[in-house]
Length: 178
Image 1: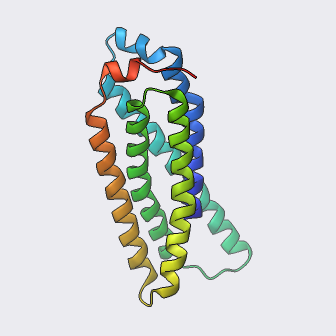
Image 2: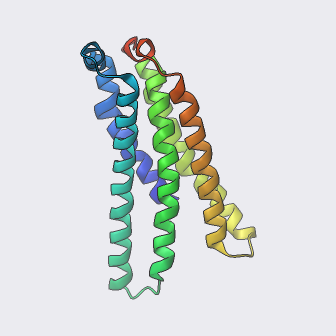
């Protein structure tokens, strides 16, 4: 869960530095006036969020393998690979959701608040949920993680698709700066 919160921090940073200023400065409006379609821009925003999350996951995977070999931690590569795949499922849903929501919101301050609140909610709330569930769970931990990952990834992906359908040129262009 901590790696997921780090992914969210990376996505938050990308949103703060790239997508939100593009909406505020009118660069998206310039692209739209030159024939660029809003759905294409939304897909590229989702792809950039997803790729940044996958890069974070790959870095955590490499660091974990390095530390496990350095300190002789007996972690099975299949277990670490499963966690990487579970993180990818959640990353897909979260990237879709956050990109769609940011395109839908008009106020820049509200965009920033929503992104930081989602980072906190996923990082802290997910960590508390998993810690409390693992203590009471007597079965296979990886089946529990897979279930959480599929549910979270599916819910966020469905919400992202729902909000993404309502994104149009007028909503994206009419951004109110701070």
